Amino acid sequence: MVVAMMPVLRQKAAAFRRGGFLLFAALFSVALVSSVYADEPIPVKPSGEERKEVLRDFVLANVEFTLLHEIGHALIHQFPIPLFGREEDAADQIATTFMILRHNTDIDPTAMNKLLMVSVEWLSEWEDAEAAHGSSAHAFWDSHSLAIQRFYNVNCLLFGANPDELSFLLDTEMLPAERGFDCEQAYSQAFEANLWLLSSFARSESSLVPYNGIVVEYEATRNPRHEMVRRWLIESGMVQEIASRATELFAWPQPVRLFFDNCPGSAEAYYNRNVYEIVVCYELLDVFLEKSEIFLSRSAVAVCANAGLRRLYGESFGCGTRPED
Ligand SMILES: [Zn+2]
Image 1 (cartoon, rainbow, N blue to C red):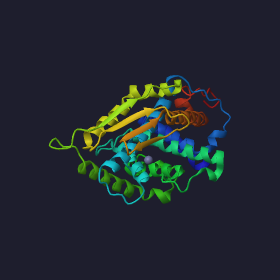
Image 2 (cartoon, rainbow, N blue to C red):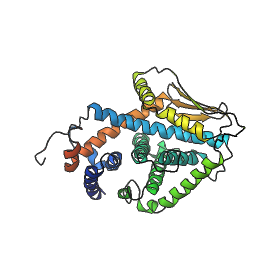
Image 3 (cartoon, rainbow, N blue to C red):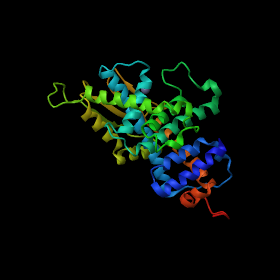
Image 4 (cartoon, rainbow, N blue to C red):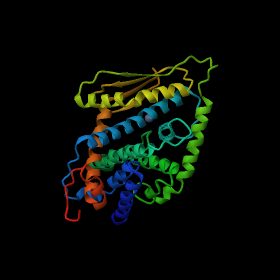
């Protein structure tokens, strides 16, 4: 696999010159999966604006997925949506499809970068748990799919929506061929389900349902790292945009409060059916920040280890120069 991955990286370096930033995260996600680079003894000092941008993009992408997953639970709770299968999987499908389509029927070109950052976060969760506790780390009885399955599920729908652009994912650790062959069909089903959801429960001017929506509130933070992420969220406008779009699209029977809170010792997000409230803990955002730092560090190792990428991005990542440069 290591040998097979190198040509992929070289092809992607060429794609950067042609296509610019679009596949930035795609490349780094593939590189991150290939653990060979982690052993390269290369000094890595990514710094400055590029570093901050990658960290922020990674955190925002994962917060967006989390919010849409919880909004998925709220939709399933408040509307008569039939489910064959686990609600947690349905909420993941809703979140992934909403990110691909941005609640609409057109594919969002930025979704590839964002969803690969989401799937890599799932992979990182799985690997960290394995490293710390072995197979006993995983709750096979849980209502959620395992983190490694969520990694493949996101990759599959994303590939199914963009089979040409993401063809390089197929038959790699990101998406084994046995799974990949079904993904266009899986995306087609998710697309139809999304259309049904939007048309079945859409807000209409003549609706007798009161104009309920999603209201965003932030508790004051108690930790500088949490405050940094809170500022990213507010400055990006992403949370408010998601809340506004979900408000406009659906005739919510009950208003939903989306609340960012301090939850010492608990890094989670959940929808509370009793009070129609989505809670996102700052501690979960801190986990995303930690993962983003790991992602950046490993990405930098991948960049510095590859001559083509080093020429393109070496300066930004502090790779230094080599004789062959
Ligand atoms: Zn859930």
